[in-house]
Each structure stands twice: as structure tokens, then as C-alpha cells.
Length: 246
Image 1 (cartoon, helix red, strand yellow):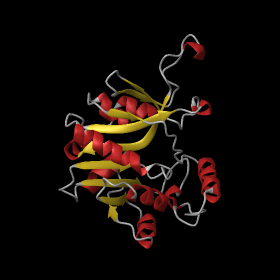
Image 2 (cartoon, one colour; image 1 turned 30 degrees about the vertical axis):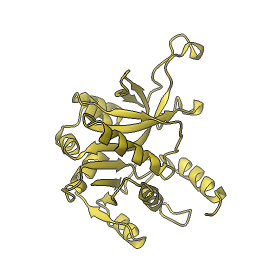
Image 3 (cartoon, helix red, strand yellow; image 1 turned 120 degrees about the vertical axis):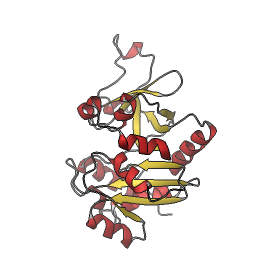
Image 4 (cartoon, one colour; image 1 turned 180 degrees about the vertical axis):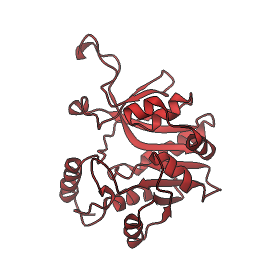
């Protein structure tokens, strides 16, 4: 069984109430749930939250909700709590609640990769970094090993081309807000204490790397735009209004 859990909290510092922003006529969390529901390899989609306003909004559009404790330090920990209600789940996808543009085929690709290689405990996705995102701390970058595993995630522009962009040999890759964990690995993550690099960069995936665990990175040529700020949400609304009606 494969489940997709979307962690959602109300109190974002950069964009309070983000999951419920509804200038498109739907709350943002509904857009993300609908994207996840389009994945052929996912058996169930649910939202994990501690906020009654989000619970009511999700249930209003027919979504499934698991209420979790409020004290989670990160989304992955919240996902791990929600996943315990599904003992048959073998793979758990953690889809950030601010990725409405994500292609559901990427969820399927993560499941396929993990089923093909039982040694992969965790996996995520990255794609090309737009030139104007290099210095943007909201655009998380990742560098990879020769085997395709994450070496490091950062809000800084890594790898730095010391001799200038003309001499660059490694691409700048943007990390997308989606992870797949084997069920046991996810619970192992939740049992790990937060780590110094995680706290410094405010990137929860660094906890996994700092504890010496591997994370496979699937590289795509797609460029989904996560919603980090009111400005990026406004851009999403503009794209949505221009999209053809299907």
C-alpha cells in the first residue's frame, strides 16, 4: 500500500494561513490534494494537521484528514504520526502542502524507483534551477553523488562555480517539496533528534543526511513552483486563471 500524506499547519511565518488561501475559488490545500489524487500508484491521499480550520476546509471538499499533535518540529514528523494509522502502508509519500503545480507523475516515479531498488530507504525529486532562483533562499538547492544520492541540501547557491559560470561542470538543481519513505524509515526519522545543520538551514531533510542515511534524488526537467510567500501565491493564482478550462 502507498499513501500520500500532506502535512498542513496554519501558522507559517512567511505566509500565515497559507493552506486556506482561496483566491482561485479553492483553498490551496485542495489544489495539492487534487494533484496527489492524480497519481496512479497512490492508494490514499490524506492531510495531516493540528488545526481545526484546516480540518473543516479539507472535509468540506471531501478530503481525508488525520488530526495530529501540535508540537511537531517539522512536516515529516507530522507525516510519521499520521502514517501510524495505516499499518499496511509500505511506502509513505510526504507531499508538502504548498506544491499545487506538482505533476502527479512524479509521485508515481518515486514509487517505481523504490519498488525497483529495495535498498532505497528515502527518495525525493529535483529539477533545473531558474537563473533568478540562485540567490533566493526560498529555492532549496541540492548536490548529488555519482550514484544519484543527495550529498547536501542548502538555501545557498550550491555548488559554487569558483571560476565563474562559464566554467560550471555541475548543474544547479532545485529541490522539490516531495519525499518518499519506506514506512520503517519514516518512523526512524521521527525518532531522530533534530540536528545542527537542520536547525541552521531550516531544512528538515538534513536531519536524515546528518544521521548518515541515504536519500535518492530523481532528476526531472520539470520546474514546479512551490508557494512560499504571498507573492508566489499571487503568481500561482495568475497562472491558474490563465490556464484553459478542462
